Image (cartoon, rainbow, N blue to C red):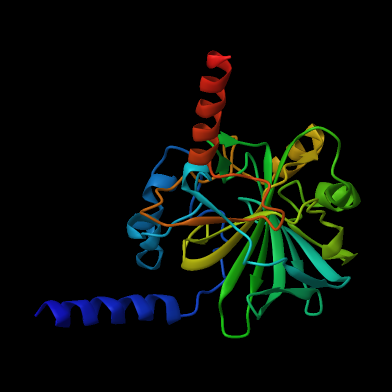
Length: 288
């Protein structure tokens, strides 16, 4: 009986990881909001049957990237970006601003799989946290492979020097900031102009952060925190048509998931080892 139960468990686990995800997020701003309301994040999974993962999923995003749960590795490898300038449309979705690329914007190769870039959008404050700290803005670049697997690249920002990519979009953002015109042809934009500034990144398995909260999404979060102008953040925030003053989903529980940090230089030490080394150094100083 124990062997049969083990086989069933392994089979279910295989199915969960084999079923392709979908990068399709709901686009209707009236379906949900970010307030403490009947349509707020705590009730997303109850609003529609197909959104049930928002409530009962076990691999939900965003998460807090705590040092003590991060495993520093060097085997993940540098991400291979192959992006190209392509025509894009800017849309105010009511819960965020989205830049949607037509075909030809290029792809990201991860572990031998090519993930084609579909769109990017912004959340403020950042949805992911690092050691309990959320930053002022986070961009999500959504990719999808030919067999339907989803990979999302996240970059976080703090208030400071304006971001050059957003600066190139500001005129178009103002066009769709109001309620009368919610979509405009943006023109040709190069995804490579969204700077990452570092080769180090976190990686874990999670979900889409808005309904339907689909799971088995591969997340890549770059470790470097970049800067963005305060006025740029305000311009992006105009998209959220409610009084929540946020379009960031609350932090979700890890449920035992692992988080890896790719560092090819191996300069960062795990949290526990840092504490141990610090204690040893303190003891040595006391003995001098």
